[in-house]
Amino acid sequence: MAEQEQKIVATLDMTGCFCPEPIIRISEEIANIGLGEIMEMLADDPSAGSDMKSWAKRTGHELVLVEESDGVARFLVRRTG
Image 1 (tube, rainbow, N blue to C red):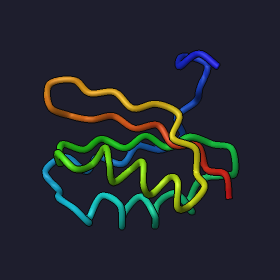
Image 2: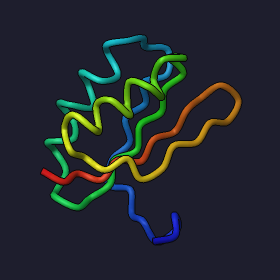
Image 3: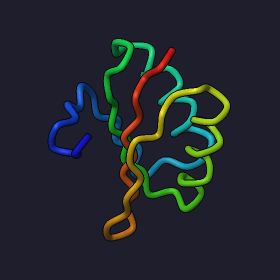
Image 4: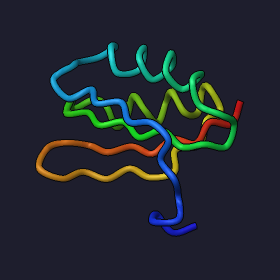
């Protein structure tokens, strides 16, 4: 599915926050969206990429997109459970 076809229903801006806060917050916030819906998270913590990949594998949520621009990583996560 092309990115423009994916409707982001919530954004969590975690820029300026460091491990483990982004993972704790997305774990809490993803419960507020429906199954199959997509949440966007922004983070500038250098460990956010590896943390998000581990978190997605552990929780079963789908990491749809990971991209970085100007030191800020953008993650799109589909809630699966």
